[in-house]
Amino acid sequence: MRKLIFILILLLGIIFIYINRGELQAVAETLQRGELRYILLAFCVQLIWTLDVAVCYRTVYRAIDLDESVPKLVTLVAAANSFNVIAPTGGVGGIAVFVNQARRRGYSSARVMVAGALVVLFDYTAFLCLLFIGLFVLIRRNNLNITELSASLFLLGACMVLGFLLYLGMKSADALANALAWMAHQMNLFLHPFIHREYLSEHRARSFAYEAAGGLHRLRQKPENLIKPFLLSLAGKFLLILILMLVFVAFKVPFTFGTLIGGFSIGYLFFIVSPTPAGIGFVEGALTLALTTLNVQLGAATVVTLAYRGITFWVPLLYGMAAFRWLTHGDVGQVTNDTAPALADIQPEVGDPPPASSRIPPSS
Image (cartoon, rainbow, N blue to C red; front, side, top):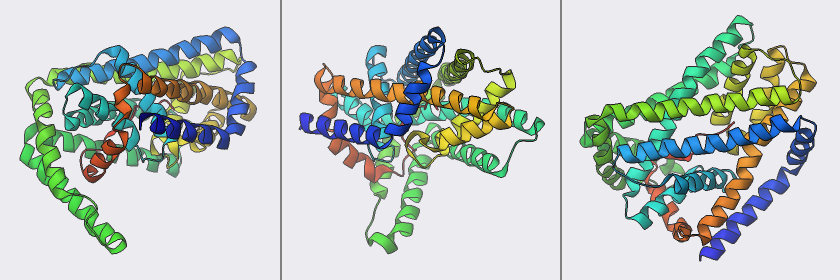
């Protein structure tokens, strides 16, 4: 079963790379034209970003009484990031990697999903701090349009909903259970005319809430434990901005601080709100357009965008596939044995706080 799952994931990865081979080839050719030392330095910063996300998970895990080593979390983060891109699971696949590792360790699946939701909340909150600066830059240069403003408001709304659900869990398990059950009920009402059955289990939503509330109650007792993961998430954003700066330097493209913040903000924004996996196709266009409106020539903006996406998207995808391969055969190999059951377990609980982790805080 484990080999079959790995073969399936590997096949999906190959298909995804084949479909997007044109962009991958363009990225490879573009990177070859940059100054090697800065490109290699950007690669190193990308690896540090992955470590930063893993350490953020580690601090959240410890805050809700879970324990996992940083090396294993680095592998899980890389594998889940890649899994979310290549597997058509709507963001559920990545959390299955974490959930199955938790099962092997005897941890609560609900708490692991809460940890993922907390990491995503910190990621969104940290990014919103920079997004406000980026939008201010665009406003000053008269370059803000309705699309960017609408996407920003959508992200703010998603962050508020997720934060509110987690706050309910910290205050009262009953309140969170009622909220998740109501959400599941509304979703069932919406889908019933199409599928003629109950899609989400309100009972499972309540069970999830009571199980998750235990970990969230720990955070209520020690709210200072929320500070470190937020700072780590913020540091991760600055690492991504540093990569963008190194790409500008590698191709000798002039830039200002406002260009970096504005360009990064728009690129990362559409990474999150894009309907395609990891914003493929959307981020490239949005970032190129944002850079041109920030007075970067179109040719240079295209080169910078392709190189930046190569380092922050394609490279993590490739080493993430290698991490997933290691998980299937290393000492945490059992993580993938139950991937299919894990997906089935999670599906009825979509009413719970968005597990987005495994929408790993994404690199744009």
